[in-house]
Image (cartoon, rainbow over all chains, first blue to last red; front, top):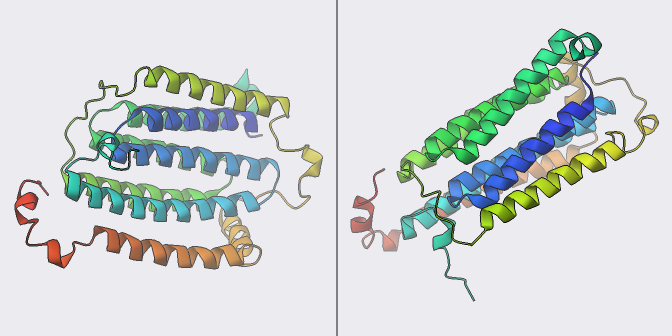
Amino acid sequence: MNVPAAWYLILAALLFGIGAFGLLTRRSALIMFMCIELMLNAVNLTFVTFSRTLSDIGGQATVFFVMVVAASEVTVGLGIVVAVFRRRSSTSVDELSELKG
Amino acid sequence: MFATAYGLANVLVFVTAALLILVGAIGVIALKNPVHSALSLIMTLFGVAVAFVAQSADFLAAVQIIVYAGAIVVLFLFVIMFLGVDRREHVHVEPLVGQRAFAAIGVVITVAGLIFLMARSHWVTGALSLSTNGTPVATGQANVKQLGTAVFTTYLFAFEATAALLVIAVVGAVLLARRERSLQADEVDVDEGVPS
């Protein structure tokens, strides 16, 4: 018998919390993208756990699509980081203050 | 105690996956060098892949390794090297007063609320009796067959939409990272200062 779903759900919640804390405190855009990946992985882990608990393959199919969206998000996001770095020579999000009201 | 209830192998696999995931995740947010953060991210992604295998999501574990650890982290490392930002970030600078404390409080409240809500609802969304009365999710090659059948029948529209999304993302990334030809002459002196 496999370990209870609760263990995996708590683990996913902790991973999501760590990712959210990093996203809120780190200033480098690259690290913030990595923290977004951590949060997406926490959600994927939750989906797979519920897929096992409820015997429904739909959870795993959803994870498949989340991975595709994450890949395209990273591609576009890093493209933006490269474009910003070319202009500002920095990846710190604090320097991007032109839109300040 | 847990080993006898759930089988020693299952508990060991869970503990291994949990250690990989949590240590890697803390490394991502705590290490100052972006290259080290990216390597910690690989550790977390491997831990998640272990958890996927333990929960009979074999195909997703393979995709996790190939796409995440193989492609996305390499893309991160490529950008870090390309931009030359692998120097230390000033993590002690706090632009907003008390930002770190407020972030910690908010995250703790969110995670505690999540766990509390899930514990209240017996760790499932809805009762177990409401689950689809299909066969349990298969492992190994049968898992690939099940997932493939679901993706190409029930989720066919979403699958086709992801194809369009990927094309748009690739074109957008090329457009964003492309250097405009008219500005190229002006940017030559700027480029020389950037180690690439």
